Length: 95
View 1: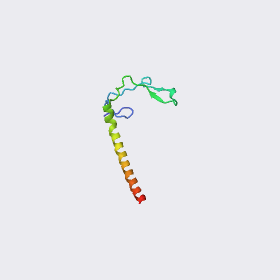
View 2: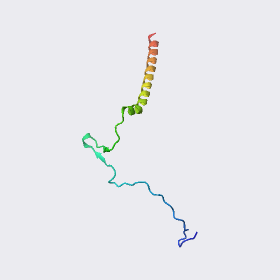
View 3: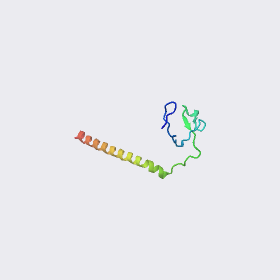
């Protein structure tokens, strides 16, 4: 390797890969819409005209039914424990 006038080593050029990120200008970004009629001002994004369709009932049930079932099971267990405790306390106090 040779040194130049500043004392720096000569190196082979560095290969920089192509930049695959697309930078957008401020005009290309979706802007929030202000809806003043509904009280406090809230930012609301415009709906995309090419938005995906509403989910079907089967998809909704697949996404939400396990949580609803688990909540129902927990509620039934808590209710049963409450009934057992109430019946035991009633038996103690009625004797």
